[in-house]
Structure formats: C-alpha cells, structure tokens
Length: 217
Image 1 (cartoon, rainbow, N blue to C red):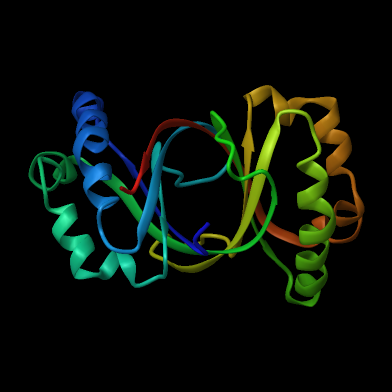
Image 2 (image 1 turned 30 degrees about the horizontal axis):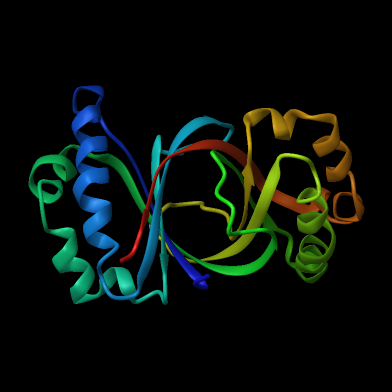
C-alpha cells in the first residue's frame, strides 16, 4: 500500500449531482488512475458528521508521493473528458489534502462499505504518548471489534482547509451500527483513552459510505 493519499472533498448542487457522479466514475477517476504514481481512487458520500465545513463528497487517491497531484501526468489526465469543462465549474467547498500513512491495523486488503473517520489535534506535551498508545493499543484494539475490517492512521502533510486537524484515523467498517455497538464502546475505553484522550483538541467524527472504487491498470 502506498504511503501517501490525496484527499479531495467537495459539494455539488443538487441539479448537477447525477452528472457529477456519472462523470466522476465513468471518466474522471478512471483517467486519474492512469496518471503515473496513482494506485487507486475510492469515492465516499458523507452520511453524518460533527465536524464543521465537511463537504458531502470525498475522493481518496492512493499515491506514491506528495508530488503526484501537481505532476504533468496528473494534469493531463485530469483535463480529459467532461469533468474539467462541465462538472468542475459547479463544484463548491473544494478542499485538497495530502496525508502520510503512519500506522495500520487489520486486513487492509478487504474492502468495506463504510468508513468512520476520526480527526484530532493533540497537546504538544502529550504528542509522543498519544502516537505511541494510538499505534500500539487503540488502533489494533478497535480492529478486534466485530465488523471492523481494518484501520489506517495518518498525519496531514499539506492542506488548503483552514483548521484541519493534524492527525486522523480511518476505520473500515461493515455498517454504521459497528461504531454504536457495545463492543466498540468497550474497546474504545482503553489505555489511550485513559491517558491522552482528554488532551485531544478539536476531536471530530464522520461516517461515510463508499460509493465507488477505481484501481490503476
């Protein structure tokens, strides 16, 4: 799995939504997956969130390194088809974020229909302990809950979204009920929660449904 991802989020007016989804999945994502350094694109639709400024649609591109979205190959593929001229002008609230994978748990080869995204900043004096306990206790512990396929943790490398938190975790889950279950709530009350959760800043959550998957090649 590549060490970086490029996350594009946006809203689209209702009158253009059908064309947006059609063009993104039949043209735009497929073309971009042919650009050098791009491995895949998963598209998501927001179902619920407590985060401000969270756009309704997101596309996560797995990439080799942060230079890929600014490369000539990416530009050429991104201008193909109807996306650039007929769809992109209608998109609003567009944000662009590059993240680096810093930890993983579970079986990342198994696709799941939903993701649960947790984002946070952390007080500087607790950052080392926060990362250690998240990677060794919290992430693997939650991956033991029935219905959690895998989890990825990342740090933000660059973004144009004001106030975006530095750290995030993406849990691939079988259904929205997983994160409401007693098993999840019990697993979440671990050493990480006891020692550092109170020092988290701007903690937010979002549930998203995967609406399309595209792979290179």
